[in-house]
Image (cartoon, rainbow, N blue to C red; front, side, top):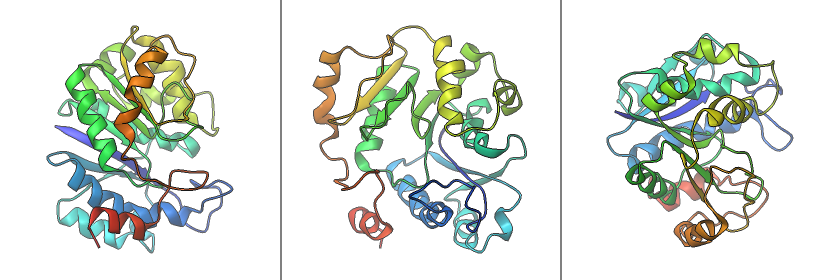
Length: 250
């Protein structure tokens, strides 16, 4: 079994939850049904899992997601461990499920694309244990929290972890980008050189990481992403209408 893993938490009126200066919490809830629908189309045979908190069923916009769950399009997974920004690490939960072979971690505020799924297929065919996609010049972390993928059994073996509770013990506290810091400090160092399959679009910086491909290999891969959604602006988010039109879901 392979899994597309998301997380969703917080109230839309709470400015501290899943928000920054340019986005509101509403965005995550509004994009969730759309991303679930697209993920089912782009990843046939995969399970889409949405990890949620105790507030999920009382949220005013939860009903469309619950309907999709009843239709088998998404599995809603309640999680009680981790808090604050560390809840982004809920997306790691499928890696501790022995039924899961691979899991890709995704953000709800960004619409997944056909090119992304094609890159995932390339990763799966290559045998590397970690996948990373960089779709914006600011994506310079060693592993992107919402654009990464892992072979589950290898993840458990290399990290020595078997649950989110063990992940929590490694966290220094509640801070932004907790997921990427955890992946950079507690996951990537456990893997050998060459474990990462890294794809990027034109203009993305190359992280200072010896496990990643050489610059020549990076340049050779640029053409792979020519079909990425042409989105103007500072962040790789498209509107629901754009995505529905592109995917033919409307």
